[in-house]
Length: 156
Ligand SMILES: CC(C)(COP(=O)(O)OP(=O)(O)OC[C@H]1O[C@@H](n2cnc3c(N)ncnc32)[C@H](O)[C@@H]1OP(=O)(O)O)[C@@H](O)C(=O)NCCC(=O)NCCS
Image (cartoon, rainbow, N blue to C red; front, side, top):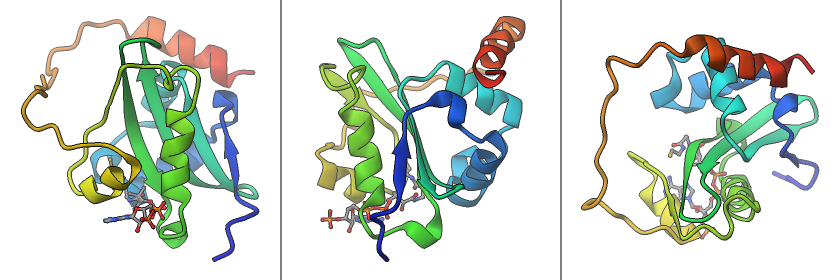
């Protein structure tokens, strides 16, 4: 596949939430149950957010959270099935890694269940020993503020 016309975009306001929801439902087993309004909150609180476009079609997505100096984490990396295998996933992750909020950070984390080989080719190493996780089953109720932030981005 010739992918020279594929565009990468860093503008969070351009994210089409319905197309993103479809892409994640098809491509990302961990994100199938996500609601569109929650995706808007996640995007409002992530930077960079990278989308990949074939004309008007959203075909790739990744986002990161970062303190800009010590730690960053990459989340929700996905390329639509028909567009895989031609280097777009690598370029997507490299776009996140080269962003000014990520490129000087001491350590960049991500979690992956099946794609270790893909990330190893980009320079990541497996790190089973240091990572812990809390499944936050009783989150504090701060939804109102978060929704306001999301509206600021998506109402423009
Ligand atoms: C993982 C994913 C983003 C890769 O996207 P892609 O566009 O197919 O990847 P690329 O074509 O850029 O491949 C980059 C390199 O990784 C290799 N690669 C890609 N997928 C691989 C896999 N599953 N296993 C091993 N190597 C893989 C490619 O051969 C290529 O190697 P090279 O640079 O030495 O030629 C894509 O398969 C995807 O969206 N999968 C479903 C969602 C997912 O699992 N996301 C990651 C979860 S954290």
